[in-house]
Each structure stands twice: as structure tokens, then as C-alpha cells.
Length: 443
Ligand code: CMC
Image (cartoon, rainbow, N blue to C red; front, side, top):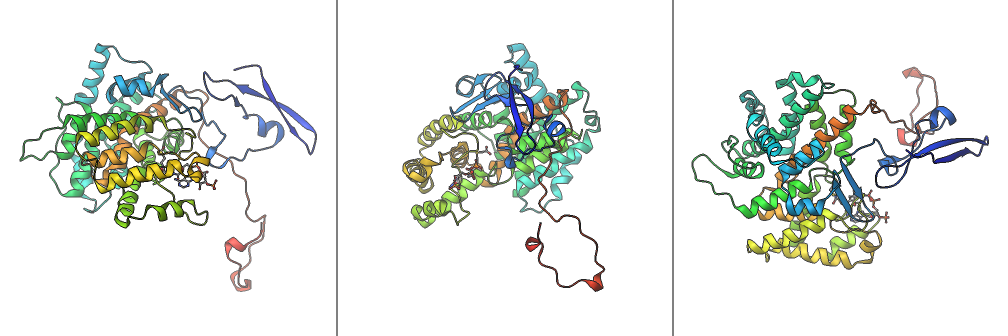
């Protein structure tokens, strides 16, 4: 906190107030507007929270102008080179990198102690239609965990919160893999305690009880990187949803289920799936130019999925890391000359040279490349966003925990700029003429 202030003057009355400027440890200074309404009678209008810090957080730092992403102060590039998803999860949860002993204990908790699902949960999976989207199953099954762990409702106990967070991180791969197995009619595979986190997930996804299963280390490495890069991203739509849901003291499983629902949308986590659908369509039609023209047409809602980011306006640092892995993996797997990858490369090239995209700073984002990698390692399309959810569960639980610990956090309750009718009196039905449609009604 500094002693600096900004002065806000209501030019209609001439009344002025001073509002404090808060300096974080990095990033833009922030005006503390909490007293604004009380002192001057104003709300602020900020659809999509373009200029609003909804909380103070010490977990992840991003600088969109410079293309920076740091977890607990560590640059994502360093973590991507030296760490693993599970170690990064420890870092995000506890704030520090673990010693070997701490990591061993954490691994034991995540991979052994909490990783089994209650057998009764299986009947939930049975209840879904067999063509259910795995994200629908994920929302339902994670929400259903609330009924298996009623102790988690004691959300003001830090030990209870930590246990719930570890349970979620530990069980998510099993729920995710089972959602796929049920949707495809295959027998489920139970988690293995001898495997690493990412290996175990791939095993539960692809192994079948009748056959030997060999895990491809290239797949494990690429997927582990994807999980790490998606583990947290400060106050995005799904994380803000988790915080808002949790702010009413809702239980953590319900709050995370709400986050999963928010993530599902194609302009958020659903983008990795939408990218491949778009590339498939483009490569079948062979006419990339018409898609580019549509993306640029202000009267067409079509957008190039996998391009642009609310925060990153120079480049997405996750995309820079994953781009290399994507090219390397496809080369290692001998898959560089598939029609889909060719289309992706052409699109990347055209968009990077086109004035429309350059002017608006629309670069390929992390989901452009992660979609291609997931496809190359054989993950079915419907599972892409599930994998994002699996990774982001770490970030969601960290933010939920941080919010519950923060003495300044309150139940989330944004205000609005009301633009509907002013007061009007009820008219009995027999006296009503034809009413204008609601959208034609005056203010
Ligand atoms: N294709 C074509 N035009 C675009 C695109 C795109 N992908 N993204 C933004 N624009 C245009 C937009 O039409 C607008 O043009 P104009 O100034 O002429 O009106 C301008 O760029 C600014 O767009 P915006 O909607 O104000 O930008 P935003 O920050 O609100 O949206 C975004 C960010 C990610 C929602 C958006 O870029 C988008 O829809 N991208 C495609 C979906 C996607 O890939 N999402 C994954 C994001 S990364 C994963 C995650 O963090 O969830």
C-alpha cells in the first residue's frame, strides 16, 4: 500500500474524494474503489472486468504486454524446462518448491492416499447417456463428490480445505478417464499407485484389462507439459467462477464443478476442442482463405479459434513453449505431414502475416498448439477440455483456498447499471392491449 491517491471529482456537484492507490509486488497499480459508492454514490461499470481486480492474489502473475507468466514467482519457461506437473502443483498449493522429502509425502497423498473413488460413484457414470460429452459427466461427477465427503462443508477449517483440495487433484484423473471409458462403453481401469500422475492418467484412459499396455514416454512428456502450462492462470472466467461460488461458503466440490462448467465454453477451455474441429473443417474444404475472410468480417460472429487472448497482447508465453514441443513431437511421431497439421501450419503463417491479426495482436494461443498435440497423442476430441479441467483443478483449489483465508474476501455480489423500465403499475389482464415486445420497451 502506498500513500498515493487518485482524486475523483463529480463534475456535476464539484465534490471530490481521494481514493488510495494500492501497489502490488508486480504489475499495474490498482485504485481501491471500495469507498466510492459510500462517499460519492457511484458504482463503476466494467463488463467483462476489463479494468477490475476482483481480489488480491499471490499465486500467479501475468503481464500481457510483455508475455509473462509466473507461478509463485517462477517463470513458466523455467518450470517447463525443469519441473513436472505434480511438482508444480505442490508449488502452487504450498507457495514453495518442495524438498525431496516434502515431494515424496505429497506424491504419496496424491497418488496413493486419496486416489480411489468410492465404488458407489460408478452408478453416477452409468446414469449418463452413452453419447454424453465427458465434460457433462465431469461436471456431474465432481459435484456428486460433495455427497461422499460431507466433512468438506466445514470450509473455514484450513486442514479440511487442504484435504478437499488434495482429494480433488488426486481423484480428477480417475473421474476424467472414467468419463471417457463410460462414454465409449469400455471397462474402467482403476488408478495405479506405481505410476506418475500423467502416466497413470494415460494408463486409465487407454489401457484395457485384457491387453498389455505400454506407455509412450513422448506422450507422457508432452501431456505433462500441457498440464503444467494449464495449471493456473490467475482470475480467468472459470477461476473467478470458483471464487464467486466459494464466496458463499459453498462446499469445494460444488465450487469446482461450477468452474468446470465455466471452462467448458468454446471461448475459454473449450477452445482446444474447437480448434481441431475448425482445422478439420478447413482441411476438408481446402479453402483457408474463406475462413480468414469470415474471421475478419465484422458482421460474422465466426472467429479463428486458437487465436487471441484477453490478457496476452504481445504473445502467449505458454504458446511459445508448447509450439516447440508440438513441432518436436510431431516430428518424433512422424506425423508432420498430416492434412490437419499442414492446415494448422498454413493458418498460423497466414494469420501471423495478415494486417487484421497483426493490428489486433491476435497470435496463436496455447490452445491452438495443445489441441494439435492432444490429437497427435491419440486423445479423443471430447476429452481435450476435460484435460484442461484436470490441470486447472490445481489452480482452482489454490484460489478457493486463498479466498477462504483472506480476511478481506466477502460474498461476491457485483452491482449493475439498471437499464430496464422505471416503476409502472400492474394492469389487470382484461385491460391490457397488445404490448410491445420486451426489447422494444422504453427505459
Ligand atoms: N478471430 C478473429 N477476430 C478476433 C479473434 C479471433 N480469434 N479474437 C478477437 N478478434 C477481434 C475481435 O473481433 C475484435 O475486433 P474489432 O476490434 O474489429 O471489433 C478484436 O479482435 C478484439 O477482440 P475482443 O473480443 O475485444 O477480445 P477479448 O480480449 O475480449 O477476447 C478471446 C479474447 C480469447 C475471447 C478472443 O480472442 C477469442 O474469442 N478467441 C478465440 C477463442 C479462443 O481461442 N479462446 C481461447 C483463449 S486461451 C485459453 C483460455 O485462457 O481460456
